[in-house]
Length: 92
Image (tube, rainbow, N blue to C red; front, side, top):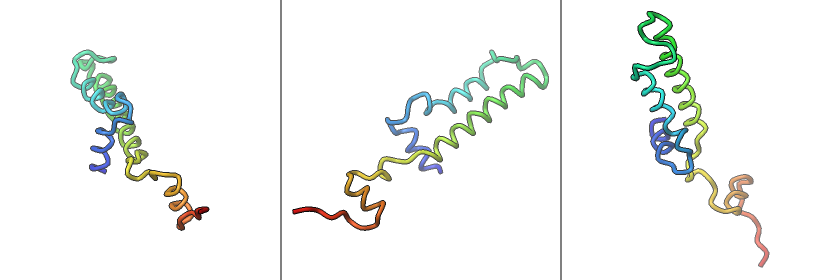
């Protein structure tokens, strides 16, 4: 999972906002300006925890669904071979 995460973050095919979702959540947690101020004893902390957990679930789901380019077939022939297990027939 760790290696896949670093590939996900460095892949230019992944939109920038998806790569930075976790960072945005941490910034929201650290910022003194929140939707619910932190000086409210429980409610102020619950919104921070909610944002962090939602971002964590999002990032984990995204990284699990991510398929590095090396796992994608390069040509149609290799895609056919991967699907059937045998190389395609060629007319010569």
